[in-house]
Every structure is written in structure tokens, then in C-alpha cells.
Length: 362
Image 1 (spheres, rainbow, N blue to C red):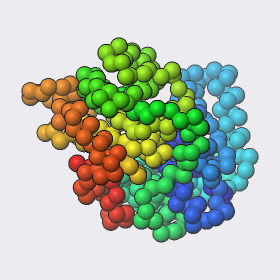
Image 2: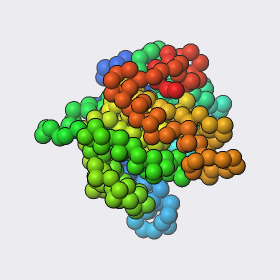
Image 3: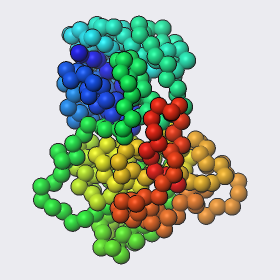
């Protein structure tokens, strides 16, 4: 069976889809996937053994130069690549009008979410096979349900298996133990305070641990260098591509992360990770998998899902909600995770009883 999967972005969304491929492949041994994905994330699907073809698109870039000759020729080549083969199923896992339109350009039976489930209901008009999946549950559970409904198999009750072999990124030369701090993210309200990162690095130093900082923008690099100037055990890494980032993460003892796409890559590689959530809700997008611990900020207005902190009370941090997650709390959680005894509570994931609670949190 050959399936064309349309799931174009973002980094976290692409990673969230991988366990569904593993589920389906366990049921259908001959199943293979082609994957339509935005070019910045095209490398990640290739790491899954059942993805045999990548069809990269550059919509984010094309829309900036929509009428240019280069965009025109690249767009034509992309559409040609979509139509070179026929598929047993074309599955739109995005649920948007633009992703549904892409399925029309390919050859095969189209499947996706129904009117009540798709993020943009009009997209459902273009599918020939539709399924109903509750939106208000963890993104990984939702993806696994979409695949199981469309391909007609029972949803596994196991933890998600991302299908990525950590070993492929392991450095054969043993490095000294180190931690990775994933400090960069897209919203200012998701940023853990810099002085907290510094205090956490000092706690790591007491244990003889180096801290490596990854960055992907000038703003993130500047923050990393400010932190490194104040702590001798902090190392600012050169800018990494996705494979380089995977290597840094895979060889780490553990990771501390804010709500960012690379935290999901750490989860996919089964690197012990403590992820910090202030304005966002780990019930729906928390890092999920083995050795993953999500710490939500228990604060009056959290999770607010806002890009700007509007809290009017007294707080010791900005954003205010992270005052509920001081460095000592994070450090103790990291130690518990390393010892294999993370604090746990029933998962708040609203999955309608389709999958057992597997995620630690407190």
C-alpha cells in the first residue's frame, strides 16, 4: 500500500505525526509513505523508515515572491512531483483548505477530517473518505486516531513510537556528560526568564555538568551568549541544522526546554526531557513519550494562550506565570526524571478513553 501524506508544517506538527506512521506500519507491513512537507522540515520525515519519498514544498517562501519566475518554475516542478505516481490513499493530516487543495493535484483516493473535525471545515468537501476526531485532545493522539480511522485499524494503546533510531545520531566518541537547555521559542510569553536559566546552569555546575545552548536566530544567539558570559559551564553551540541539533540532543544526558519544536525532537529521540509550560497547555501539545516530563505553571491565569502577558498582579517574573516554576523546582524534577522516578499524575489529555494516561506532569 502506498500513501501520500500531506502534513506540511510546523516542526512540532511534523514530529507529532511520526507515531501514527509507526502504528500504521505495524498493521500493514508493506505500507510505504510519500510525504508533502515544507522544505525547512523535509529532513525529519526521511528519518522514519517507512517514508520512502519526500516531496518538499516552499509555500512560505513562494508566497513572498508569488509572481517571480523562480517561484513559478518551482511551483510547477512541485505539482509535477505530486502527479508522477498514483497512490492507494492521499491523506490530508493538516485539515486546511490549502492542504486539501494539494490532494486534488495528486492521483488517488483522498481522505481527511470531516466538517466537524477539520480546522477549516471547508477542506472536508474535497475528501472522499472522512473521519470524525475530537480536536480537544493531544495532537499526537489526534494524529494516531486519524490514521487508524482512515486506514481502518484499532488504535494501539501503547506510548507513541516515533520511529526514529536515536543510535543513528550517537557520537561514537564518548563525550563528557552534558545537559542541553532549549531556551528559544516563538512567543515571548513562552520564554523562561534568563536569570532562571542562569541559576539552573549553576545548579548543573555543582554536579560537574556542562550545559550546551542551541540557537536558531540572532535574538536567541544573543541570549545564549549573555548566559555563557555569566557561567563558565555554559557552551554556546555553533548554529545547527536539524541533523546537527538531533546529534546534540541525542548525545545529551538530559534536556530542559520551553515549549518549542526541538523539545518534541528530544521526545522523539527518547532523551530525558523536562519541558516548561506557562501560557500554553501541555494537555494538547506537551512533549509526549518515554522519559518526558511536562511542568505546567500552576498560576491563576495559566494557560492563557496569549503572546503578551497581561497579568496585573504582583509577580517576580515576566511572564508572570513562570514565577510558579523556579529553577529549584525544575532541577528537582530533572533529578527525579534521571533517577527514573518522575513525579506523576493522571494525564489531563482529553482523549475520550481512546488511549491510557501515559504522560507525567505535576
